[in-house]
Image 1 (cartoon, rainbow, N blue to C red):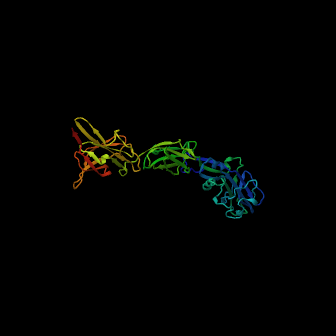
Image 2: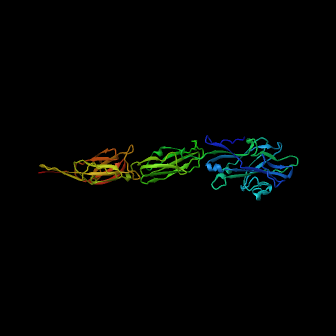
Image 3: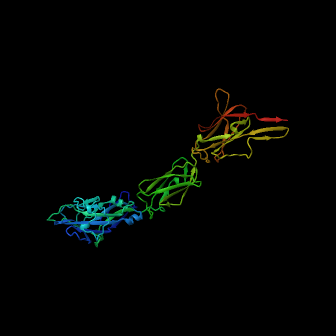
Length: 452
C-alpha cells in the first residue's frame, strides 16, 4: 500500500488514517444510462471516441470533523491494475462542486457539475487537484491536503467529491483506458483511500502548563508561562490552532488581561503584566474547561520603590526639640507604623522640685512602587535611605547626615535624628540619589527645663 511521507513536524503525535470512499462509481459515454458499481474503476478512452470512461469518488470527513482532529497531510491514493505499459497517458483528478450525487443514480447523462462536463480540458467545475501517469501496479498519490482541510472548515460540507478523467485523445490501435481498484475489491490494499496524517483533539485535562508566572510576579514586570497542548492519550501536539483563554483575578475583583500567542508547534506562549500587587487566582481554559487544574495561586509582589511616588508627613518634618532625639518612620504606601499608643506631640511633665517638659515628634514616610503598591519586603539590593539636615541662613547649604535608619523588617524604616542647637534648618530624605522629600524647613525648639 502507498504510504504518506512523514510530516517534518509530525513526531509521535501524528497518526495515519486511511479513510475509504463513501461511494465510488464509473460511467461510460457509449452507454449513457449505465452506472458501473463494480470492483474496478475505469478512466480514459478506448477504441472509438464514444468509448470514454470517467470515475467518481466521494469521501465523508464528518466523523473526523466531529472528533476535533486536525489534518497535517492528506493524499488521494489510487492503485492502477490494468494500463497500457507503452502508452504515455495522463490522468487528472478534479474537485466537484456538486457533492449531492448518489452512485446508484449517476450515469453519463446526469453527471454532477453538468454545466461543465463538456469541457475537454477540465470536465468539472472545481479545481484540478493533480495529474499523474498511471503505470500498472504502481500506486498513485495525489496531495490534496489543502482541499481536505478546507472541507473541515466551519460551514463546509465535510465532503470531498472527486472526478477522475483523461483528456488524452483515443487511438484506434491501442486501448488508452486504465482500470483502478474500487472499494468492492477483495484485496483491501488496492482500494482507493484518502490517506491522512492527523493529530487528535487537544485535551484540557492532559495539557500542561509550566513557568514562573504560574506562581509569582512583580507589579509592572511581564510574567510568563508556557502551554503545551496534549491529546487525550497524553501525546504532545505538533500543530497549533487551539483557542486558549486565561483569567487572572483577585478576591477584590482586580483582573489582569493575558496574551496567549500560538507558536504553531503545539505550544503557546502566555504573558501578562499586573500593576496591582496582591494574591491572584490564574486559570487557563480550553473550550470552557479548565486546563491542567482548576486554578493557580499567583503572588504579585510590589515593584521596586519609586522615589517619585513616596510621601513624607508628620510633625517631625516641621519642628523638633534641640538636644532631644526625634523619630520618624519610613513605611510602605498607606501603612502607618506607630510604636507609641500616645497622642503626638507628647508633653510629659514631672512634678518634683524639678519640672521637665519634653516634646517627642513622629514623622512618617510612605514608600510606594511606581503603581502605588505597598512594599512590605524592604528595598532592592543596593538601595538605601538617607536623611540629611542643613542649617539655614548661610550662603550655601552644608548637608550633614544626622540620622540613623533601622529596618524594622516589616516594610517600615525607623529614622532617629537629633539637632544640638535651636534654629532654622532644612531636612531632606533620599532613596539613593533620588529625593523622596525635597528640602523642608525644620525649626528645632530649645528643650525646656524649669526648676521651682
